[in-house]
Length: 574
Image (cartoon, rainbow, N blue to C red; front, side, top):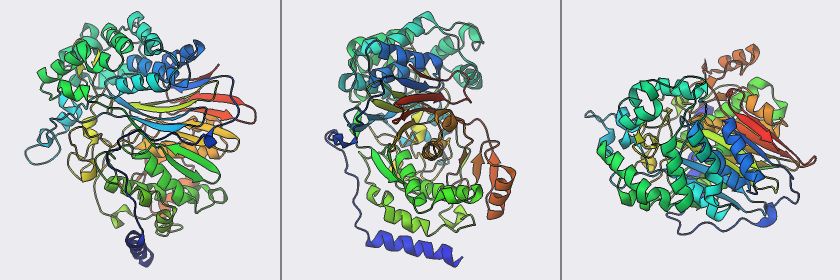
């Protein structure tokens, strides 16, 4: 008990004595290019893509075969996923990307959704002040202004080699000619059928013949094909203005939403400086706010840097990782939000000295109850969103995570567009210190405001070592952060792409105070030891779906792997 009390004194001293620099508010311009010292001299000479659907992977490879680079391929993969994997992402949602250009330039692209100008907190509260989960998760009030179409146009204009319409061509073809939905999409439609039935355009798209699609049927999406064609021809204006923009606003307002034409026209992609952390000879480049993931991963790695994990047995290694997770998620809840709206003590959170103070609070063989920190209540973390990884023949790298938030997003399709809207408004702290659908808590830093980006767990990352490069990311709601962390550690342990995506996973997010684990994550001895340390273990499924590309610099060989938990995923090198 004395040790647990002392850690609070230690942290207080650090906070008082440190000269804390805060993140700048409302950056006026994209960050300058990263120094070319991060360029890799050699080139792979071949390309690799790993995504959650083979149609998307093949689309990325097709575009690169026609002269496109990794960023053109990213457009092809993302737009194809919008057609074949709408349960997890789409042009009605947003994305976050960490990209590394072959010349060494590294940047984070924030195409996260934003709150409409007329956002009204009372729309998301019941009369008793509790969160109104229906409005936050279903229908047009749950939808933020989409960022993915603007992000795809930005990639093409600033980083790609091909016209946007050429990179969108595979998705448009698949939408027009049709594809056979996989089991996960069919199950998602069935799971959300009651909500889908509330919206006529959603019924027309996802319940053809008044029922969910069945395995083996060919499914077409002509409305979304047309929307993508307009995006390809006119770029940003093809989605946010003109025909598509008007249809989106009209549909949302007719169904009780509050979007305006100005909300769409004023959307902006943001370029930000990635978070970089050095850990035992590796350089990890990851996502800054409005993602919470990179800060949490960096904080965890900084804590773990004080231990030699290779000298520990599985139980004690896992114990230290869990305790680092617990502390990072606590800070996630208290401090983080949209950097254009809130000041965050990032220098403190990312400081190795702050991590050293946190490390002092970890007992060597006993769990620290989260009740020793401010108490709260959480629910099960979710398993949605999607991620893909790309390396092209020249060494350009894209690590991109996309989402519509919950399964099938808002379930609301804007009539005449084929666009399934997100339900990202639930990612705001609609009621401070009350959990969202993923059990994550938030403070006023993540409260909704006009034009504000909601905090995200998306954690696209690139890991650079002396002999290897890894492109890593995953869906999974709040578990994205811990899955990416475990993928990074597995990469550093020498696992290949297939080994990284297949390894069993575990997760702790501060509240609820338990360890969620994949069946088989711990052997009997490790599970027993963790239980005796004071941990509550809970098996859960599903888990995934990670997609990884690695580059062996010595052999100059790429390796791509898609999570085996997803049958339709594909990692491929050509």
